Image 1 (cartoon, one colour):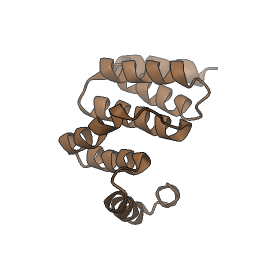
Image 2 (spheres, rainbow, N blue to C red; image 1 turned 180 degrees about the vertical axis):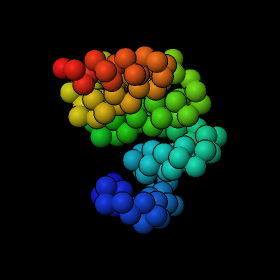
Image 3 (cartoon, one colour; image 1 turned 90 degrees about the vertical axis):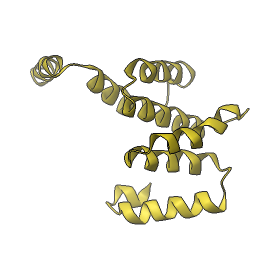
Image 4 (cartoon, rainbow, N blue to C red; image 1 turned 30 degrees about the vertical axis):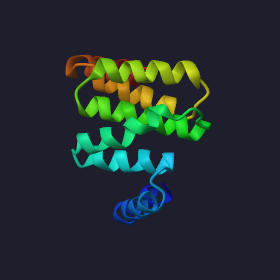
Length: 128
């Protein structure tokens, strides 16, 4: 994540791939790999990485946040906005205090609005 924030995308992806290769059951490694697959347009790869994670009995907060965010990204990439909304609502109901919700709420709202609605929304936001 730090490499990504620094704009070092290739290094970040290399590290994620190495971690996933060494620790294939590491949930955060799986979600990070799934995000790479989504970014590359390989949605089947992402689905295959995420499917076994559904059966994890326990997740810590960070793992659950990553799990939900990745499912939202996958749903949006598949143009299944309703499914993305379901994942978002479930995430919000379980972890309303997640610091990532605002970022995904904005992203989700933006992706489900028509261009005309986005323009109106942006106009109303800028006048506040």
